[in-house]
Amino acid sequence: METGVFLEITGICNVCGRSGKMYTCSMCGTIVCADCYDHELGLCRSCKNILKGKKTLKDKKRKEILKDSKRNSKG
Ligand SMILES: [Zn+2]
Ligand SMILES: [Zn+2]
Image (cartoon, rainbow, N blue to C red; front, side):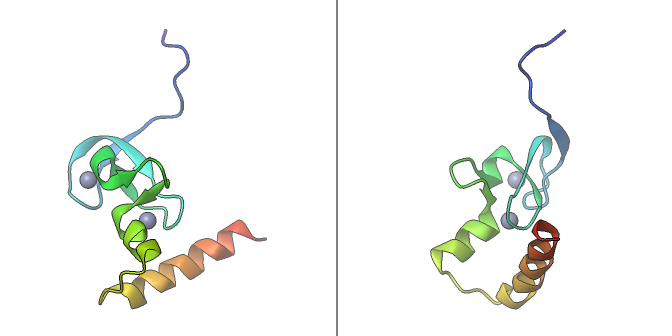
């Protein structure tokens, strides 16, 4: 029996498509691999870019997702 193991998620990364141990972005909820996940911020690459203030064409769509995750935290 393993001890001291947190809830581990295994699956396929939504960013690069790699399989293995996954992390959930605390901002958009996307499942990403360790490579695409920022452990310091707890965010996926996309959200990290948003925090950086980098505006992309996908920004509009991303905002919709953020709005949705906000709704979940309150209520
Ligand atoms: Zn990845
Ligand atoms: Zn994210």
